[in-house]
Amino acid sequence: MAENKIRSEIIETGNPHIKSARIIIQADPSLIFSFLSDPKRHKEIDGSSTITANISGPDEMVLGSKFGMKMHLGINYRILNTVVEYKRDELIAWRHLGRWRWRYELVDLGNGSTQVTESFDGSYAPGIAQIWLRVRKAYPWTQLAVAKTLVRLKNAAEEK
Image (cartoon, rainbow, N blue to C red; front, side):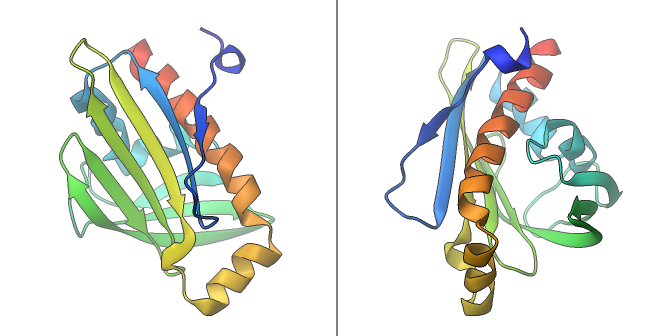
């Protein structure tokens, strides 16, 4: 299927600091989780198009794992992320110095398909980071990036 024909569903969270979307993927949770827990695959599924390269990290992340990325958002920079939530094949989330989180929740629908919800959660960011997120208008932009990431994840997982 062409990426532009598939859409993820944007979810209203009731919290202006949390932007979420969900999608159904015709694949088992373990396959989908293998994409999410391998930092070398993140560039492939990144809907924001800000990841330029993986520079460090394990082949499979677990709670406490650290992984580095080369990024580009107006300027080139590097970021170090830490996995802060983890339940194999069900949940993984990471954060960086700004403290906001990218969280993926997987629900096995029992028929060979999985519901995946991705959330960008800025509520953990300290005051100065909150100001930066607002000034940069990060929340509306991130809402679209989350939705696009899920479409890319679906395409990658269903091609396997």
